[in-house]
Image (cartoon, rainbow, N blue to C red; front, side, top):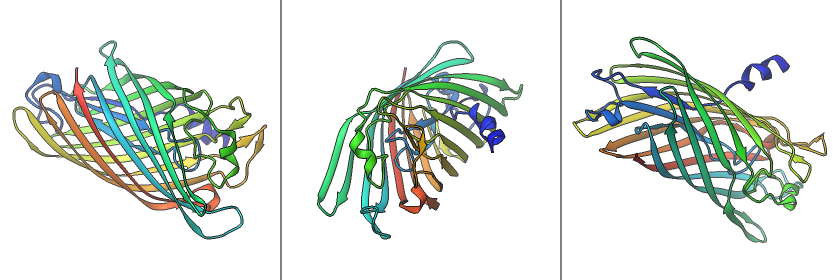
Length: 318
């Protein structure tokens, strides 16, 4: 098991995909500004463990350099308390995120994001709401390999999550300790992403691993491994616009949380989602949306069930 963990510690899912000028690429329009097909793993960071910290999917962004705004919603069903077996409590995680990507060199770029969360869970005593800024992410993305025909590309990244949000120690006593604005810890991300692209089709395989550290309250959320396979197909294009669809699978595996160095029960878990989405660009603007539904879910030892995820973003090319 340790060998498997070590293999994935070097991985995080952000990809920069470049379409060679003149090719009939699914992501290329006549404007040279959009001859790049950019893929990024967005960690919503709604919280830190078995529910709520899921990646929204490996987004395809039609601008090589951009600033943008994204909304990401997650729905979970959890036990009302530790003394019941029924999953009756609806929990909603909502995030509005400001993000951007700036190239430093031909092969190196920097990605950053700052989220604002507003979460809600419906208890028997009434709704409980929390809101506020979350944790910032900064990541360096490097193009490791690009084939001469531009059909194959391998990219890697390394990043850090900065604990700007508030961690509430009282929140860890419930069924879902992830009902938080922040992990309260400095967390480290690494990843790898492979792309095959030819003509109207692209296939993306991404994997990433997040190492979460102990926060000031001596609580440590479990490390997280994400993986995804996504297919893209260009549906329509003209001189200034392009429309593509995407279909794929995304999985997540969470390790157990710890408090004062001791493993916490019912905090590990895993989930597998199917996802469907689209992306469209017009001149400097791009718009995308994605829906994710679980094919398998066992979070927090079965105390939490994933229901659905939805995201939509608007980006402006710089």
